[in-house]
Image (cartoon, rainbow, N blue to C red):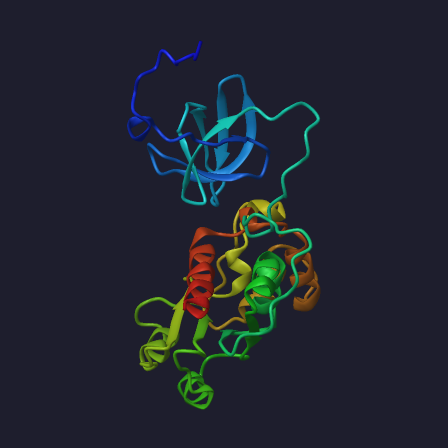
Length: 267
């Protein structure tokens, strides 16, 4: 005899199946109830711990349909013992794409003030920039920024993003930034006197960045106040070696660089 299911619910009324995804370390998901987005760092009995881009941790129950993965509803489950590891994250906190080839460079660019700024951006966001095809160049100051923007001639297919140090109301940098009016150019900045200050003191084993009186060379003053040799090049290498990921940088810089990358890669 033909067997019939005891469930007489019409097919169109049945909930669609939701895929189960192993909560492997590094997997980036969004908790559907709170909108908290982060990477899996720990999975225990019935719970998963996520870490967002600013290093904040949240623990959530692994309930059915409880998370979004790339916009799709999923159910997180504990990974199988000894299962294959998920891709790790890049220094910027993005999920790494093993074997990804660098994209041909875009016409758009990101300009930063100096070599140290460029090296820091490369160390933390380099993998992301290569995949997106974004080139970072440095200006050695922003005094001539309006003419530089005019010469670049930004347009819909060649957007220009500029990262400026010490961009606070009333500063010289603030006045220069306001003079750039192209809709295809975006000038943003952080509040620190120099990119050095955007590195968290704790990442360098110091209590805080020293305050240097006006009229003194800031970098030289920092070296002396910290008891470092008067060699700003060596001091920068010391600072850069203390940066391993986005966790070593202040949020005021993180948000601005991400904003520039989004701007120059927008369709």
